[in-house]
Image (cartoon, rainbow over all chains, first blue to last red; front, side, top):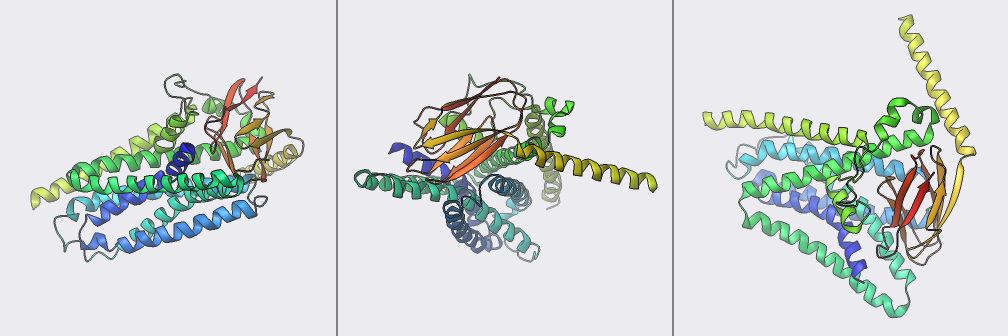
Length: 290
Length: 115
């Protein structure tokens, strides 16, 4: 029962982090930022519908979704989500400083519509991805167990959802308790870590697809160098363990990372941090001018 | 111009060869069967040859949903009760690769042993 509770919480926590952080960002912003909220909730609704539809597809047409179709779909979703998260962090960096201060400055910006659709898509993807698995899992529970334990398991599932919403609530509380600046710094890192994990998963799966479909490709010298594990930290934190796999989803942690994974992880952080560093400068100048 | 064309053609031929090779291999790929039953793996230990592409056919014979997952092999596959699917695994280095049922975490893990 505790297991069911944990699984439901874990499956929903990733989506809740995305939704919760975006909600806190937009809700704590100015009037212009709050205009993004309907897109956020629209994304939540679309995501739930998509999750149920996907879950039903997994149940009803498992042959259709068997094999590679599920993989292609996962790759597409994780890569798009990773890009959207990074884009959102950059957008907030540009606008976050001004969000609480000047109300009118960002009101006129018509370019924001594009960003709002990004919010919509990001939220919908996050919920659809994890939600569809939760749907299948819960369906399995509903169908599988004996009547005696079914009630308890359904209860555990509901409790898991409640726990997930508690996480969401704590996030909102965090936005109020800590200074906006500190809250923004922390949540920004959480989202960037999540995006790193998604990017890594997507690229690794893409490479696997190539390796699986072509002997010629997998026999190339540089390819076997790329896929060789660089180190082994499974003694410290095994990514196949319950806690380890959660850390792996949320941060891109790998106990035995391939050379390519290490390279992508490093390049990702170099690019993101240098681009974010560049963003800061004009804002400092603006401040000095103002 | 003609050089570029030649390069393009060479690339195209390479691609076609790769794809046809892929489909040829898909036919006689070494296949292993794995049954999942409410968190139990049958068998829990699969011995496979290293350096060769393999396919694992997964059948969920349990009453609850299952998710075949391996972090090391970067595989995750959700299976409704009664559902069947497969994963193809790229040529492995000799070693042990753990897999588990992400929906039944309290059950013992399985392992693929590549030799």
